[in-house]
Image (cartoon, rainbow, N blue to C red; front, side, top):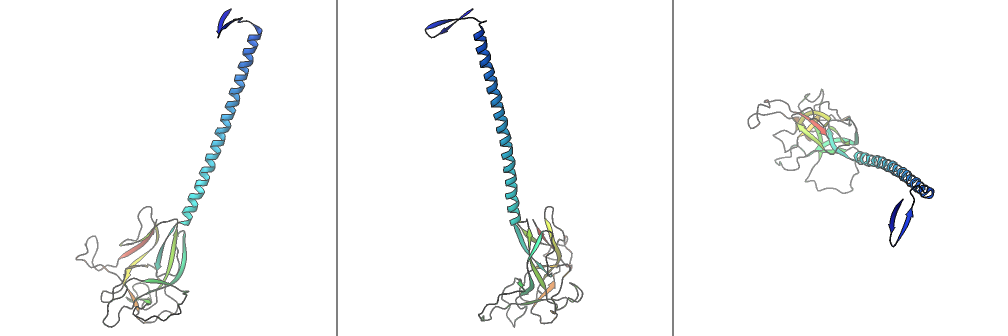
Length: 249
């Protein structure tokens, strides 16, 4: 028999009182039921959290894939009518053009080349004519391909999916690790005795425009070669054609 104090009065308590034992058992059973219920609730919450985390990961993957699919870089494939790179789409096909390589004694004007689409939307205004745009022809005989002399140069604007950059690397035919090769070829440009021009990477297997063989000599392309002196040789070698490659990442 023990005595407990409860504020201002005392109660006599028998440890073997059946009512007390039963009350304690009921309280213990209720506590166990509460623990089981809380454990089940915790398990349910953990399962719900795991499911939500899985759904969140799936949604993140969908968003990431959507952003990746919307991303892409563009490049011009000079000398070809189509795009053939992996995961690459053609935006349009057309033909190469630039300024006339020689116009009396003047040597000004733009140096860059353009890839003109073959389905132009023609303006309704006549231009004054101080800036000219003419088609591009292959020169250097059969160097680029058999029968290439005086043929017109095709081109295609290509989009490489899932990439953010496309670059042309002169002096190489392969891309570094992590970069995808779009095409390789030979570096080409206008002649040093002509108006300024840009260097382009002409496809190693160039095509010709249909019915384009006509020696009009508007804008012309020659193979670019090395010239040792101010150019370090080695690693370069004198009088050699220069490889090139277009890479995307």
